[in-house]
Length: 624
Image (cartoon, rainbow, N blue to C red):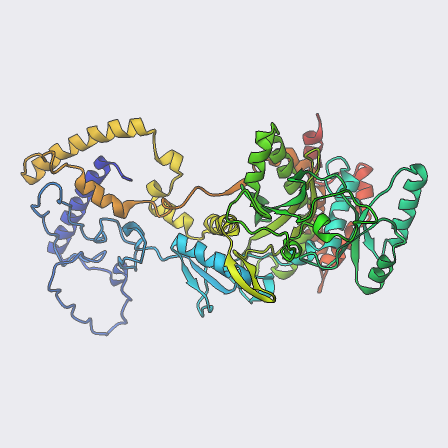
């Protein structure tokens, strides 16, 4: 694909000749050359200047070097003629960056040869390593699997921000995120928002924190039953720090003996169980969506356009005392259902016990479901959940990386587990700080003997998420755009419609062939030797390095839709006030625990009409 127009290439050739003539004139006048301008270290006074050996073959002069006059363009056939780069230009016709020589890096286009590749430290990546390696290879970046003494651009951690001590670059974890998305902390954060905006946060099931709110749980359940004797609820108990379905069970009544054991062993959350989920093939399923929190200040949120759907392996029935223990019927956790004899491994994205979310949407669309409405509700759920998490997350961030001190910038991929109800309303189940990025699964070859087998469904979704997260966080993107704006611009801006490009290209090639024949004294090229063959060969070095990649799978939802949700950011403003005025008092730092104490009774004041800086804007935004 041709990147630059023929007229631009010809203009570059003329410019090279002009620069060459200027350098030759400078040599005649014996202009003193600054060694630092050519990328050479300046020498101390009195130090002898070494004699530069004359190369056996002519080469391009370094920037600022006027000792080697430029050669005239070679008299080659039109199809092979290429202008000789002048001083200050690399051998491929592009201007050099000072202090760097023009070298080809493997897989990189010529004009990028003066820019180093992005470096990624993957020594702490753990289970996401395979997907990360594929992503780095597709991007043609440089991986350091065992770490590096020099700083890297990006550090990829498998568990938390504190996996490694880093003071610069970018790291794929926020400090405090693991604590923020635990069951209890998430429930508290959402409850604060439910007290302020009950209609906006009705996507999260009613929750009680155990053991602190056990008596409240018992009293509220008894009160509702007394008012409606026909109400027969089911509750799901989730350990606070549990993962992969560990320790989760269902109960019908607070007097269940298993609940007594939970109260004595570890903290947990008990929630209302969603009894009427959407079923496909008579099976319950949930959705794992990947959300990129690119920045806290300003807040930037991206959602992957595709995710995973994890299915139960036993046909669903509404909870009853007889089937409460059937985990393969009620729990969608992949780590549980993979041990079921009914689990189906499939390389197809639309069959099996794990499928792509896009295949589910396609199936719903074929039945007349409004897919745009489903996506809109999911996006709203994600934005509101992140808004609920960010206030305390900012306090964590400030505690670990105080303003004005050296430290890395952070981003993070979150896993949102969402359940669609029968009426297609999305319900938030939980948020994962470390969603699994494994792209293989265990397959039992014989009783007790397992083998890791590649999962095409996982690879299709997860590699795209990691790769495009890295593309969005690319620290050298601005440098490339400043040096090479034409090839770094957006594709839809870079290319006009095909019909226009073809007609204009034929005209430009015709003009270029005439001009070249006049300059080089050669006849016009024949049909057997078309004039654009040299352009085609040159275009191989001028291609956009991202041209081989698909379009980015991550869609920005905030600040794109900020106007619709800014009125919900009241607690976020309180966090800013807390950090500014109370976060550091003398030598005592008030961290996340102090913020929870600070925020505990404030929502009541907000409901009473407390105005914070900027709350007038909130009232305007909330007004119909």
